[in-house]
Amino acid sequence: MKTMEDGQVMLYSSSVNGQEAKIPYPWLVFNEKIKVNTVFLRDSTAVSDSVLLLFGGNVSRGHRDGHLKMLGGYLEFFMKPDLAEMYLKLKRELDDYILCKMLNPKMKIKLSEELISVVRLLIIEDQCNGRFTFGRQEVIPKKSKPLISKSSEGGDVNVKGLLQTLLARAGHDVPRYRTKELRNNHFKAAVEFNGMQFVGQSCSNKKLAEKDAAKEALEWLNCGSSSDLRLKDAK
Image 1 (cartoon, rainbow, N blue to C red):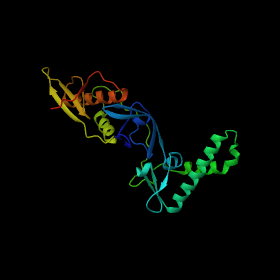
Image 2: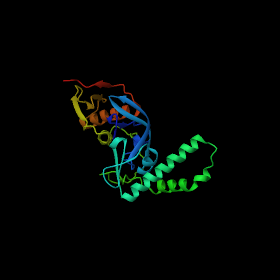
Image 3: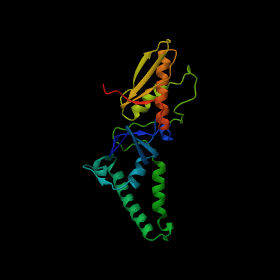
Image 4: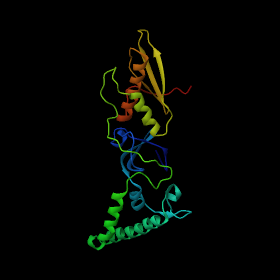
């Protein structure tokens, strides 16, 4: 996931979309960005190709028939030529209608009922799978699950897997774990990623120690703070 200005970004984990393993939409619009070693997006809404093409700003023709571009070519869409022409024509009419409505707020919507009906139908029929985006594969939506479930120390929740999935979605490397054996035959682990280190509590074995460190990292991503956050040693 990336933006034009920031490159790779992550969803703020306490947001609704941040708790989704996969988002079956090709695009996200967002209201706020927060930078904490990496850039997090908040107040995001997933949208389809049709919504972006009709309401997302200027659209221009590409170098071939059926090729549409936005943001100077940063966003590209590929479709049948007649479908591309339909989008361009519909967008021009929609932009003209919105401008007229802004200049004349009392203008009756009934005068453009046909246009609005076409736009509504197009958006409803769009399967939101990014079919016009080159190389995108359709994702089947899944039910939302909490990022971290309450569990005992020996529970079955795969917090290490959750953390790795979250980081992979943002384009970051796999998290690294460092474990130290304490004098009381217990273990304490730290997980490192993106220049940060999170230390877990003392546990009875190495596996549980790594899980606790991963849980600390997930809780920080979910809440935006941690009582045991340290910058990774530069060595």
